[in-house]
Image (cartoon, rainbow, N blue to C red; front, side):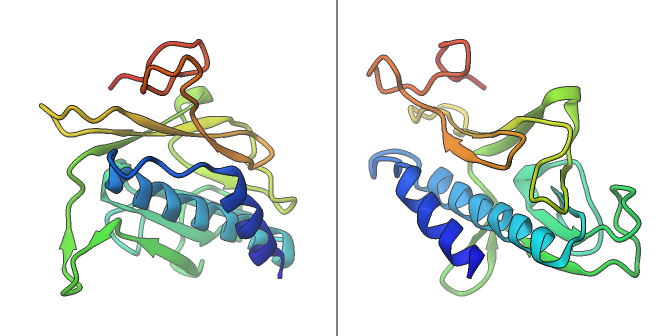
Length: 179
């Protein structure tokens, strides 16, 4: 119930990327938001720390967000997945209609305070120790702009804004996003 309410509220607050822009970025961001909301809801309902990390496989964390992500219940609260800690979600970003995996054409970068590459979600649903952003960078030689999701310590997510109306989203200092 909590997850449904959070998802509905978030869908009202996150503006959709324009259709002429990166459909890939939109798909990735929608999945990322869905998984973060699920992690927050589960951490609260189960009173257990959850960890979200980049992962190419469903068994361990990696270093490249572009390959996918892994959500697991971190029973021993060490930030690393042990064999006895259940995987709650393994996301591989894009799939074709035939169900085969396709690599992202762009790339994803997670930037956070202290350069931590994992999100630790507390029993209160908070993103402990860090604010951060997930940036989608278009493929080389593309005219598409970069896009960014901003995640604060309370777990709220928003899409970076285009404050000056030039068609490019800006970072927190007002500079156009670049990769």
